[in-house]
Each structure stands twice: as structure tokens, then as C-alpha cells.
Image (cartoon, rainbow, N blue to C red; front, side, top):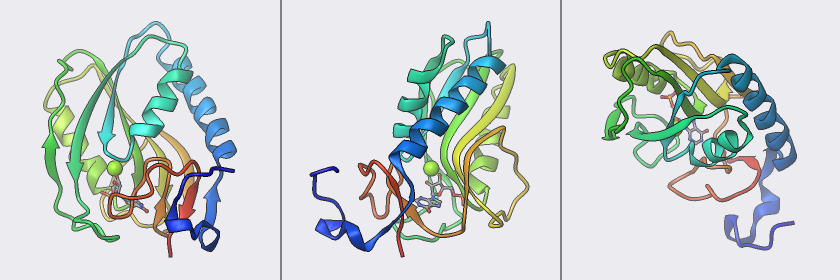
Length: 181
Ligand code: IMP
Ligand code: MG
């Protein structure tokens, strides 16, 4: 369908895990649920860069409530497919979040370390509420105790790319989510 080059023209070698249509449908459902839960409030949605930028931009356009948007950037993967376990803050959020309803928007939760790290980062700022939405959750890979309030799709513990998710900074621009073997 798309005529732009991706996977260096070898796209057929890779398996689609979640299609563009499935993503659209699920993002709409999540937005409806979030709109219901935050009715009358104006949450700050904090996108976790870089991976969540496409999910966040699709999600907010489906919301039926006012919201604000901000970003943090953290890193745990040093360019490979396995988390280093060492998380660093690369960009801090700018918003005043104390007393505000904060919804952190992640692309994927794997070991759970990033979610845990973000929970600590934001708890210190005393928001009125702190919730997490992740488009994807890898089943059975958690190494820390963490909770997500909204999950788009449970997926197997394989490495995936597309719809914002990268391998070595590439493939974020693919419309579907693929398993990268
Ligand atoms: P965690 O801290 O181990 O839960 O890892 C979460 C972060 O690692 C995500 O926000 C992603 O940036 C990255 N990540 C984990 N699994 C994948 C994957 O399959 N593809 C691309 N990035 C991933
Ligand atoms: Mg991420």
C-alpha cells in the first residue's frame, strides 16, 4: 500500500503483528475510555520520547476532552534490542504538574523499568493523579512490579518496530507494527 522505501525494500520478509486498521480501532477505543475517565478534567498527557510520539498524536486527536501535552525523553536501550537496564533522563518535562492530572503515554512496556522510573520521577512532583497508558505490553517480561492503567495490545516477547517504535532509530515511520527477527 505504502510506496515509501522501508526495510530497504524487503518489507515482505517481515511479519505484520498489528495492522494500521487494528491500531486505528484500538486507539479510538482507548481515547473513548480515557475521555470517559477524565470527563470534566484537563489532564496533561506526557509522551515518552521518542517511541510514543505517533501513538500520542493519534490518541489526543481522538480525545473528547481538553488536554495539555508535554514530553519527557528517557533512554534504556543503547541502540540494541536488549535493554541495558540503566535508564537516563535525556529531557525533563516543562509543565507544572503539581495538583494536575497526569497521564504518561508510553509506546511499549517490556521489563517495566521505564514505567517504574517515570513513576518515581512524577510522584516527586505531587500530581493530583498519575496514570499510565502504554500502546503495547510484552507478556511475561516484567522484572519489576509495575502497573498500567490502559493497555492497547498484549504482545509476545519479540522485538517489534513501526508506528513510532524503532530498531537503531529506524522503522518508526512504518504504518503497521512488525516483528523484527
Ligand atoms: P522497559 O523499561 O524494559 O519496560 O522498556 C521500555 C522501553 O524500551 C520502551 O519504552 C521502548 O522504548 C523500548 N522497547 C522495549 N521493547 C521494544 C521493542 O520491541 N521495540 C522497540 N522498542 C522497545
Ligand atoms: Mg519508550
